[in-house]
Length: 286
Image (cartoon, rainbow, N blue to C red; front, side, top):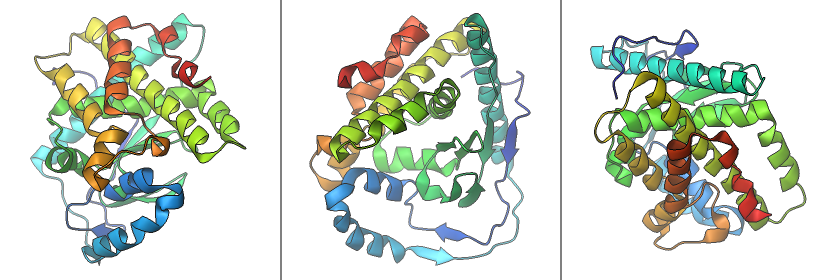
């Protein structure tokens, strides 16, 4: 991705290297706990016990002093700030075209653990968006885990895709989609509620594609292989791919984020069309 020398957002907080005296998780399990919960939820939750017990053996509680960021860490922070700035420019323009005012989210980079408006979180949560404080939270070690454990290609545009996906959840928060989805989940069976969650996640993938469409149109950011990096990341975090890797078989009723094919499909639809009106992922469950 072409990003060096362009505007960086002033809505980013870099908390990496700041000691919080929290749990440091070892053994290379970034993102695994939340993925396991997504896979085994509901009646199968008891299967988590032996897995988490094994993971706990790799955990250490530590309170380490603040650590200075390396040159590579600083460069990655600058890259994330540039991508966030691009999302601000694209969504401000799209909101204005629809007679709406865009409220910029903040993004927090952290290491190991973080305090959020939605409560405490560890790196095991993976990247996430908190609607209470309108912030995107990211431990960048997650992307190394995507490569080594889940087979994604890696690359800077994989990170851009994830940032754009989480900002997509911010769009849903601003438009009221997230609140409506939670209302619809009330009184539904677990399988029905999960389908609504899948629709929300796929729409965030669609919004990530729409962002990429306009970022390329306005800034000509794409380099050879960038879209493949995004699609590889989307494929790696599909529910079916995760379930096959973690438990050897697929349980569609437990899907919460969508299959690899669905995630790639909706990102591609947003990227190729650039039409925000084509992102009604909830149609498939009506």
